Image 1 (cartoon, one colour):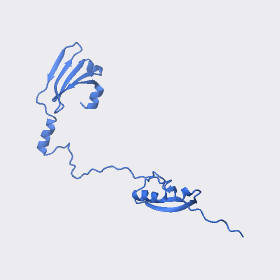
Image 2 (image 1 turned 60 degrees about the vertical axis):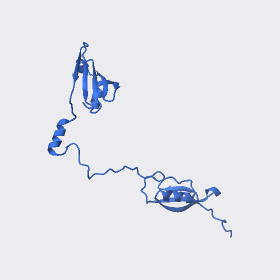
Image 3 (image 1 turned 120 degrees about the vertical axis):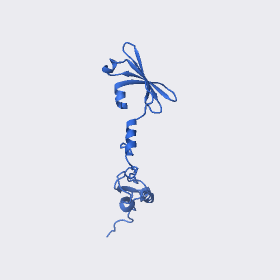
Image 4 (image 1 turned 30 degrees about the vertical axis):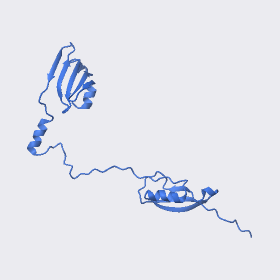
Length: 179
């Protein structure tokens, strides 16, 4: 029985385990099972996870014990594999390779950084950088600081692509000429 079906069909408690056995108590959840037995104690072999013994307690408290000997896992399938040379349930994966999944690279945010630091961050990430002078700086600490980047930060962009950075430019010296 598949594990998900067993969980839906029975309430199970782990009674204990040793080096070679696991003891499980199962109570039926379905009425048709509860009509046949009140509880079942199953002793599993830890090497194969097949039952060694099953004790069923009927609704009238009578007990029946079933014991299993010399059980093998999927013995018919193993015989099939011996006849035809390989198991049809084990695919030949010789030509397949595992490809690690990677998240798409995203553009780091360099807004608020000085232009040299921004250039270092983006070139280290594998991007080409193009600078554009923008608005004049109103304070000395804004001079050559990045205030816009295209494409925006956190955008998915392949390495090697170009990113345009706009920085606060040096204010024009002098004023308007008087005539």
